[in-house]
Image (tube, rainbow, N blue to C red):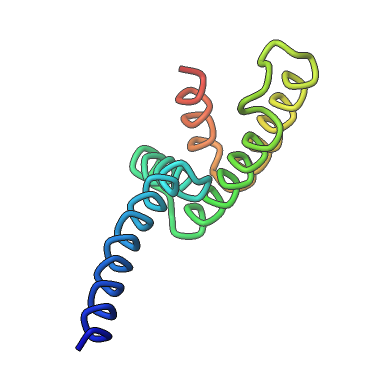
Length: 116
């Protein structure tokens, strides 16, 4: 009987602990590059009427940009020449990828949206 109570108490504590771990993971996942890219892709898809292939290409380009920004730009001194060069390089890579994925009209509209 004592063992049964210990097992039940241990199970209860584990279940409570897993709930808080899941909540922390969900909170961290909101800032992951994939989540950010998915949100941006959804917005661009509505504004630019993207096809399925275009959505996949835009998503991939945005994930690469977000990953590289996290690696080279975010959390660093924004006025540093090295960071500014890295940011410019990543923006050029994104622009090249978007130019390949979008039609000319879509690309021009995307450029005007990104300049706002």
